[in-house]
View 1 (tube, rainbow, N blue to C red):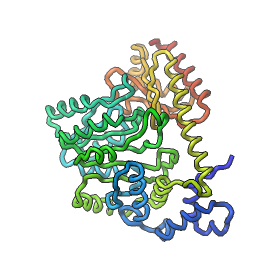
View 2: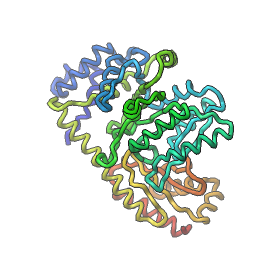
View 3: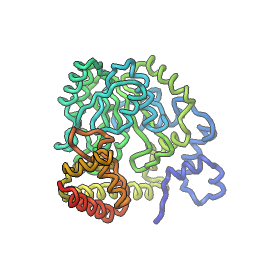
View 4: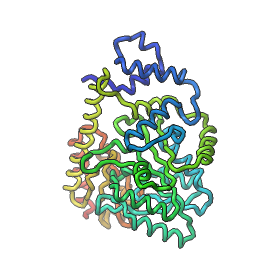
Length: 414
């Protein structure tokens, strides 16, 4: 099968521009033109760039956002970063002004947030997602978390939303997003919108992605918003290149100047990551030489992820003591498992959390590695694990998992 991976071809030609002459028939003409455009702007991938990111690429990101949302975007409000997590950490370090500063975090959540709070001496204010309704976000639950934190002496300043969710894969509907923006207005919260899975949609017609930038602009809300995206997800999965960006909405020029000072300490984001961002937000267009194969590859990846997610959710839900939301987005499933008192006691005797005990047994018996739900946070007495949908060979993979689960239930009961 032909593999173009046009972003990798662009990366190769920006690393070694002479390849275009040494192998003139190896690269599509649009790839060669893209690499030349970037090198003309960069000079070399080994050189420093502007600390905020290459101006050409920030301009392209702004156009991508405008095309996606239908509202203006300025490259002056965009910061290219070494992955989205670098931007999250930077902004949390600046926003957490005192030890009683509270940050609303969804549970279950991507552990980056609690780790960053520990690093910058902030307080986590958890709000629980509703598993019974597809891991939905309840505005009332967020409101209750704010009130509870206030009684405990925490001044809640920031709301983190992960959409689509990690580890849940849940997608917010626009009505809920509007209510969350109104909540931020009511409580003077800064909104951090982690939207790195925005292109990982398995049921696009039923569960479309809407950015918080679009919602804020549509409602003319004044809330401060930082929106994050990354090349680590989507159809790229280029985690090691460390490329991402964040956009500032309703942020004053003085604050943006302070952010610029902070990013300048790190000189610049990795050039290879910045090039990856440009390829992600500016893929081949119809009529260009590399477009047909790029389109085929992209559609195949989306179809494979959707198919694997559906098959795995169905098989998991057929197992005794397992319930699993059929995730409409992201790259994971987050099934809930019922563990008997006998299993919980065995786990405690082994010095492990019960879901860790289960997950280690799964790894030992099958070689399948899952992440225990206790690492993401969960309600007292509930147990989960996060399972990726990335691996080919779904039938064999799920068969082994089901076999282990049935043996575990036979040994420990439900």
